[in-house]
Amino acid sequence: MHSPFFSIVLPTYNRASFIEAAVNSVIVQTYADWELIIIDDGSTDNTKEIVAKFTDARIRYIWQQNAERSAARNKGISLCNGEFICFLDSDDTWRPYHLHTHFDKIKACNYEAAFYFTGMVWNFTDRKKEVIFPAPNKNNQVEYVITNQIGTPTVCVHHTILKTEQFNTALRINEDVELFARIAAKHRIIQIPVATIDVIVHDTNTQALEKNYITPQIHVMKVIFNNPLLIDKISAGFKKERILNLRHQLINHYL
Image (cartoon, rainbow, N blue to C red; front, side, top):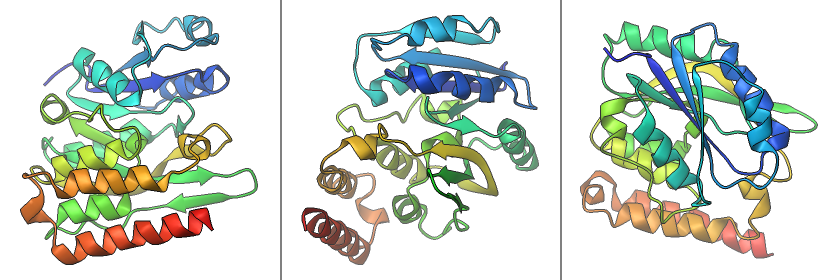
């Protein structure tokens, strides 16, 4: 068993106003056997100075030239020492029991090398929305992860899986969906029906900044559907329905 038990990869880019809360949410975890790897993807604000305030020896900070989120996450994965790898976005926070919830489930599953995920809470300015994903479809895990678009900060994946399957750096949107589809084709995905993440909705979320958020999603679906590993794991009806749904969203977007 590797030590620490959990490695946490936190990519960031010009999120100085959010990152302190994100890091603090890791420090207060009730499960303490972790390392936090912060990959600063070329920030030009005072992110480095804010991170430098933290003196916890479990935290590492690495700066790189801007190469986008997928490259930053892959860089973090390459530096991980933990048995399981988790992700946290720099504008979101974990609830104090996030790692303990994962650990308890992993232990209950005899430390199976698999893909684990919890639920999340969307924090809008005027309301909150809790999302507990439905139980996975054991007959078709690939279609399940595409349909539900599991949030990256909810997942915890065995290191052997992520050393082989990593984020596609050619994708800027839904890169997590594409990765998770590849993982679901080979490994068991295990749901934990507890909300352990607070997703902070704000004006600089990726989706808010993109003028057209739908067309890149259609491109990602085509990447997934054309992957030889996945072709036989996704039904023709599912592919057609997914593309039609996105095209309808695109029409509504432009209307």
